[in-house]
Amino acid sequence: MTDKKFNYKYKRGQVWIETVVYTLIAFAILGAILGFAKPKIEQLQDKSIIEQSIGMLEDIDTTIEEIQTVSGNKREIELSIKKGSLNIDAQNDQIIFEIDSQYLYSEPGIPIKKGSIEIYNNKIGKINKINATK
Image 1 (cartoon, rainbow, N blue to C red):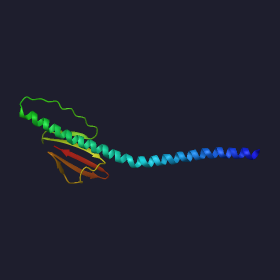
Image 2: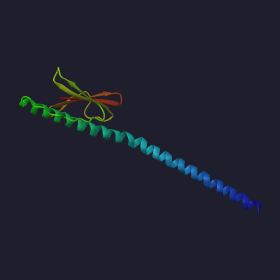
Image 3: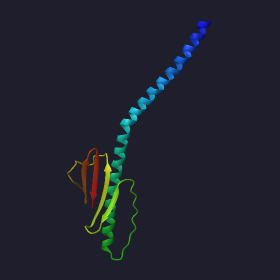
Image 4: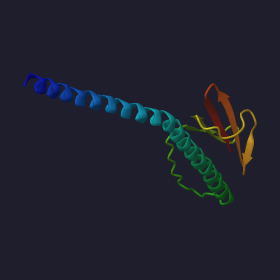
């Protein structure tokens, strides 16, 4: 009779140990997947934000050009910026969008033109400082 009690307690403890080990393995796998996927997701989000911001700069430029053709014309422009900053330099007649991103938009140090917008990527460590100027 004592042998059966001993075996029952042993098997019951073994089930709990296996459960804990399997749970730890599952957490390790999830951690590894998130460690790889999270930076890629952030890069895709940054790419989307940059593309939307460049489109926004083009819309602002188009609206400003339309306003200049007719005197006394006023327009309202709605802007929504989730990340980065939008600076208006009236003295130099420029609109500048800046964002710190993990996404590599262009070759660092080489400016590119997309329409009338000049995009410059400056790499600082792992971060890319992207500057779009109109």
